[in-house]
Amino acid sequence: MTYWNEGIVQACISRFPMLIVLLMLQSVSSLILQEYAEGILERHVTISIFLTMLVGTGGNAGGQSAAVVLQGLASQEIKPSHSLQLFIKELSIASVLSFLVSFCGFLRVWIQTDSRSDALVISIILFFIVLTSIGIGTFLPLGFSMLQKFVKRHMGKRAGSIINPANTTFPTFQVVTDLVGIVITVVVADLMYGQFDY
Image (cartoon, rainbow, N blue to C red):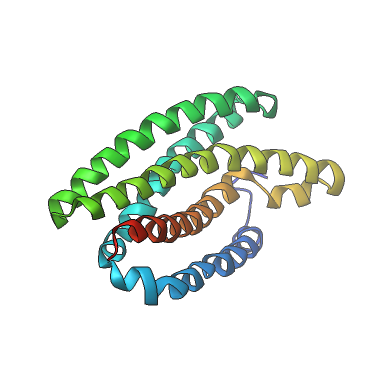
């Protein structure tokens, strides 16, 4: 079914279930933050100040990879059989970009806070968030593409259309990278600030 042939009701029916699942999944982040709010986030307000930068940068970096992979899947330049080559190339890209972005993040935080320890902690968090988000952005569209083919084969074309990588990748990616980014933030901050607290 093409975009113009799909009615408003059908579009809502195909999009609504995923939005509700993602809403529930996204709410897990509030539980994570609530757990750490009385500890690390209260003692180190800098983490709270830069939380949107941390999570947002992960989304931006991984979103670039997701867009490239989706475009490659659509043009059939990228296929599931290319998973190993894709992993090696994107891991290389992710490593370089994680280093560069975390260095810039270090400078950004240091300039604003005049605290090298805060800048170091946030740059390490940023490194792992960008690295992880690029991995998620690379393999989520590939996974949805393989799932869609499986569902179409076993449950029919109509069922497979619900798992359209174009509709499901970015909303799912955003929620997953936000959650992963928050987990990385609180875990790394807890570990790192334990070295600086007195």
